[in-house]
Amino acid sequence: MDISPLFILLCVGGLMFAVQMILRARKRRSRTGHKGTDNLVAVLVSVNIAGMFGLGWLALAILIQDGVMGVELAICAGLIAAMALITLVALAFKRRRRIRTALAMLAAVALPTVALCGFLLYIDNHPIGMR
Image (tube, rainbow, N blue to C red; front, side, top):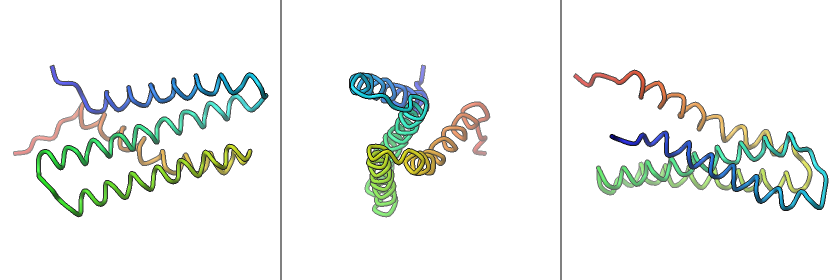
């Protein structure tokens, strides 16, 4: 039985969401906030972390199967760095109570990750004949 990389990425996203919810539950005791938007931020951050993990997985697969391919590895490293930077900036905006700006930034980064996961689900269910 072969484990799908998409399944592992979804598990990573779920684990990151659970960790964020636990950490935020400790902080929430001292203040009141917008619970719905906080949950949405946690979901989007989890999707972004899973996307970064998936890009790292892709870079590792490129290294193992094809050897050192400088351009492709540089693209993966650049995308991971951009996703991490935008996610950190969005979390800084959230901390300064600019929730809408943080949500917009996180959604802009999470959208390609969600689209890629949808495409991978489609490919898993409809394999391409390489003849």
